Image (cartoon, rainbow, N blue to C red; front, side, top):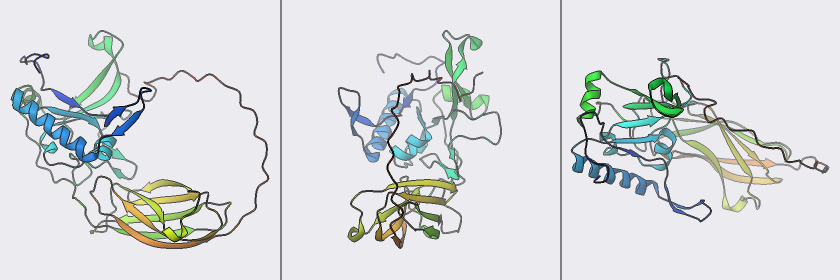
Length: 303
């Protein structure tokens, strides 16, 4: 804080940019150790409280939805700070668009309301703004939208911010898992399960995922590949590839890393018979082809 200097009347409060939970790097740059969800959450709470105490202004937390859900715990304390949310490739000027949504549900974190609405204060909707258009040196810049009135924005510059009175998502709400149908035939075909999970009011869960957990007595020696496709909110198709012939016991497990919805399970038993063993064919020799140039703005809004 001492090196940054003081505020002027034209400055917004500081923001904590939190997008990474790696705490130990290898010399190659690969991450050797990640912080736990609890540690990331506590660190953010502590840092933001320190900033507020030392500056007298309420700071922002800047991040993106999948990190907030997948790497942090929900926290009533964090919800007392304004959220600066980054999500690109959707038009903020279309009234039906909103950040924080995903196919068949939403990302659930400290700022997610019961209707799956993310309580953001600033939405960064592109990193590909045309800098000269706004009198900014360079070629690219981030563009944002503020949620509120002009008076609200000026109050932010004074460090004043009050969270909206919004019902947030529950914690460990009971769920019920149903296996609608499944198919298990031969080793040549996928084993598939169509699964739905509902809340106590019979509405679908809004986040989470499903997987097959084998009984220890029938756990395959070679782990098969599991692929999950979310069909719609609260419904998934789970496909298992690479199972050897045999009888299997296990359970389909629904889990939610955000702990909005509680875990639920259903037992399964199925048989896979030996299919036709394919004749191996030699693989053609691959020739190296140069990688095309990557356009970081390919799917972003440019204005």
